[in-house]
Length: 120
Image 1 (cartoon, one colour):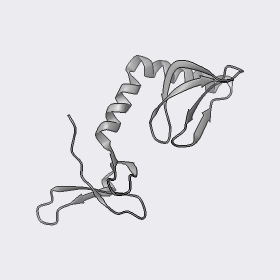
Image 2 (spheres, rainbow, N blue to C red):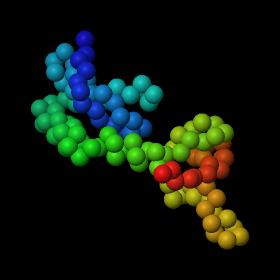
Image 3 (cartoon, rainbow, N blue to C red):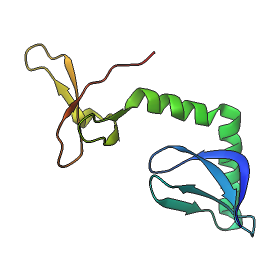
């Protein structure tokens, strides 16, 4: 049976903050149900480095920084619901004055234009 810890770590796929758990042999891992992945850390060197990253993240406020980045730079398409990070290649500008119109949804079947308003 897994043991939950008080530590958090971001999912490497979606950047969502997830609880760090320990296996019955006290090896750390994270599970991200929305992405459907599990990340297990094996070996003494990997576990030591993972623990260092967790401690540094706790000290530097990593979970709060990631949530703020996600709030600012991750959009959800109103048409298909696809979540994506803004990227330069997705920028759509006005042909008239060059102003930002939004970002094209990168989902293959969608192509909707998603507006971007920086939230305070």
